[in-house]
Length: 159
Image (cartoon, rainbow, N blue to C red):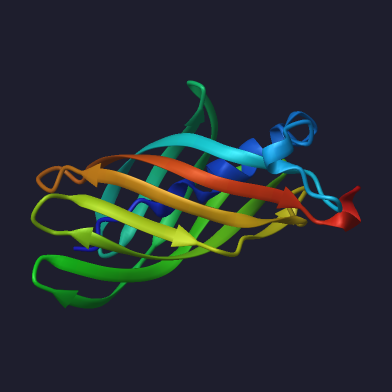
């Protein structure tokens, strides 16, 4: 019943990797040792049941990757289900994994989750940052939409 789409983690990572040069010019996201970028993406996905999800992530209307999630319910209080699990993001040149924790309102379909750590492989091996996912799932069909926000940086070793 875990209908979560924290799947867009990778979308944020792809955005950060695509924009570091632009982001380094922005004083709000400047860091003395690593280029960073704000994340603003959208996801459209499907809850497959048994804690499994899949989604497509977009930035400015362009598809940047796909995600899969595998979540476990950690508790329920009233209509609020808490969950945790990894989101794997597939992008050209590599993958990203973000462990998330969050909540799903089983009465309204609204969800929110966050990740404070991202690990990657391939060209994304040096990505770090934090992401927040907010959205709504249609509890009858399992379809969901979400927005993804946060900040992603490249570690100094990639410069």
